[in-house]
Length: 441
Image (cartoon, rainbow, N blue to C red):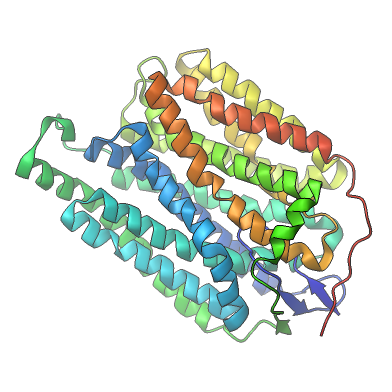
């Protein structure tokens, strides 16, 4: 039997596997895919650590600092569909190797960026790194959706995202210890000329050392994956148009869901990117950047815990109603954080991670219900919608600069969550229409 992939974050075009009824029975493959979720989740979350570091070193405003996320998530727009075409040509396992090696190259580009102390080169390195992440996601996301029966896809996608959140919990904790903190009593704003260049070069070495370590680890993982390059049974791919998914936007449920993916990723990334600077404010916690960086793990850790819990709840409750509830919860927490001070303000902001937990996989699976063999075409649009992680954070940073208040800037993520709550209510009932059958040629 041939079944179409039920895609999730990052898959971009139609792919099929020759499978027995009910999906692939391959425990080792499950471990491999979970490991990939852990890796690309952790690397993505390191942006939350390097943003405050680069902001200080290059004396950036919030809008300029958010270009880190803009360059990173622009890769989803630029690379997603070409990356899927590459995977269709060379296969899932070889595609994973290509993605891992591209990530390794991106990590190594931090070396010339540091040597020249050039912000633009750091942004380019992040774009290359993110391009590899996108290709890895093209491989991992359709596979995890195939590893079990269709009726548990909501739960399974959420469970896989929990391993992504495990990476986003651990990496910032380690990264903040390695990257944040500076020379006592010295800031870039106090220096100029040669002294400023030397300071930037010296301080960015911590970033370089971190990413060199990641490059070595990625090379080892790529070598391991290469040894299993022919292990996936019955893999075949069709050759539909790379742009075929755009026609699905005429389907209201899918179009609304794609918009919500754009808004969700943008809101999640915006809040994560501001955590360090938010907690450093005197009326919140007034702590150092290094101490604030260590607390990022609570934001992403909440998402991890919520995804493990959600993987069960989504089996027994309406996914749409759960989505609307957690989106409303995120709005309440933003309101509490913006209108309080001290630990209440800090921990209510961090608790938004718990509300985020089930949003992406639930929005995705609700939007793609009953697309059948066009599900992977639809994921190309979902992949592009992740570009929200580039746009919304920059707009949030611009709002913070114009208003002079990070609390006020949280209004934009709150608006995103309000629209997501509306989608949950709209999609609380099953999609109409029969499930389309895959067609083989």
